[in-house]
Amino acid sequence: MIQNVYTELVEQTCKYLRYQRELFGEELFIGDSEAFRRPHPSLHPETLDELEKAIQNCQKCSLSKTRTHFVFGTGNADANLMLIGEAPGKDEDRQGEPFVGKAGQLLDKILIAIGFQRDEVYIGNVLKCRPPNNRDPLPEEIALCMPHLIKQLDVIQPKLILALGRIAAQALLKTSASLTQLRSEALEFKGIPMMVTYHPAALLRNPHWKIPVWEDVQKLRKTYDEIVGDKPEWQPPKK
Image (tube, rainbow, N blue to C red; front, side, top):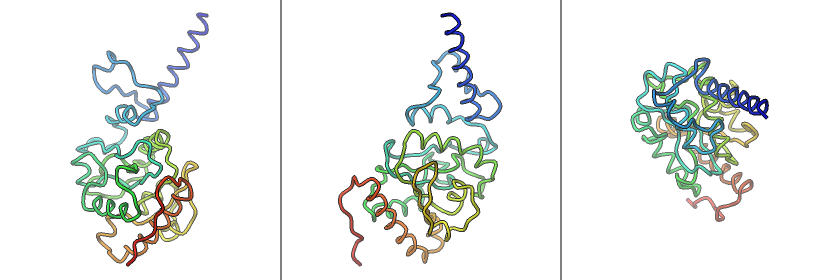
């Protein structure tokens, strides 16, 4: 019996250390001096709140030193549709929530146009911290932050993913394919059907892309209805 207890203790310790490595890299992370006096979090977080508490102090890359807020994600924890962008911008870094600036307002309008409210879906980013001056994420930053996103997907278990923008799609799929090519292909990420469209911020700079985005999201809604089918019948608004 003692041997069994010892074996279980070793196994749990190994699981804990592997989990810490996934979250924080090779160095053991202790968030603060109270850590030893608190019950330690689940080795496999079962809720988004547990996951956020486990990773919100992440210091795996240099972005932790320049961020204002760690931008975890927002929305319905049981969402069937998950939207994934590239990284937080200035407004998101300041408020700690993804897609809250002008691009976020446009995204809300796009969702409403296909029959979704923002609180029905889950919205996150590949990176949880803002790159300085909104530069493109670096490959090493994507590699270090991707486990956080994968754990979010494990908890939410969406039925469909919409990648917003070329960089988000390329990061998820580990590809250099163009956005035009990715928009035309049947894709999946971690076994979940995935579609790609332009980032809302790109539409603010290039309004002529609104037409292909409207085509993309109509296709998204059709695919959602085929896969999930939990919403009232929808038809595109008549012009």
